[in-house]
Image (tube, rainbow, N blue to C red; front, side, top):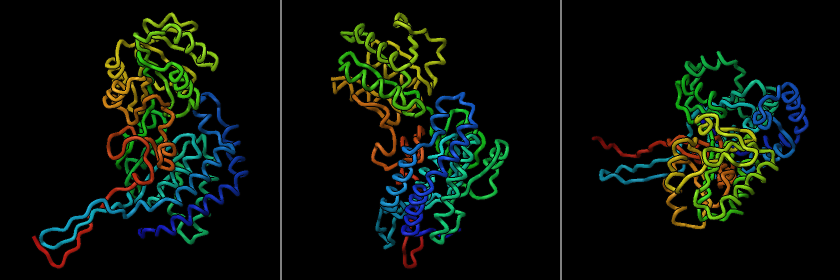
Length: 398
């Protein structure tokens, strides 16, 4: 399986897969129901990620068709140079080779992330969690049918049905070439992969995202952004966990009252820090660890800062390096905040929920990287490639 597939071959497989997911929707939903019935339900966020419904199926189909419509990310010229000795030098994008995706509970990853990896000319090794096994095996069966229908070997998509010990052994000493490993899940999973992998790892890290309500904020916008970020999808890594209120906000007490009421109406537990402990119905922070924690639950920690500078310092100390938003009518302060907050995505008067490959114009994502190499934020089709130098000569020696 060393030969690269043409772009037409890759697109044909993606279209076939989209049609099969649509056609076999009922079988995917049946397999997913078995997984849901087997799941203990102890983790609200994981259960949300595990569930497949009509909307998620539509998302899978749309993702595959959109991928098929996009330009080939492989072989794109990034640089060219004519050497003084007459050699012609090019730098072009190239596939990684084999990409391993290790993920928890999300059957849609088996479609969307695999689709992005495949379109980029990579072989995919999928290692899903045991909680979504039936859903994943049903979807991989469709991948194999899509490949076979286009006379392409099923080796391009492989599901690794390994337990933790076998996964650990495979990461350290793979029995086939692995060029890149992408873990998608909680901090325990990411730590496990980083400690054991002999291949390069791109970390799709924790969220723990912040909203800073500046003293010159439009408080209506602030309420909308906080509510959307907190309750839109609690299992998402782009959800909001922390809210910083500027001590100099003119109508601070009124705003806090509105915020408390809005969050309480949406069943969000409020954890209040320091001077804000008087917020009705809130509980105090148990320890500093809560500032670092990604909640993935209906709870929000609200704290107070004296300035934008203090907000920036707090975010850079505690956040997961994912997303942060400033609510302010002051463009200069907002620009300063955005330039100095060390996150993959920074927002001005908008929700952190937009940190997503589809929403940011990439058509989907393999993962959202909180690393700084080789791509930060959503990893889309055009980022799942490395590069390669092509040098043409006629006998030049150095």
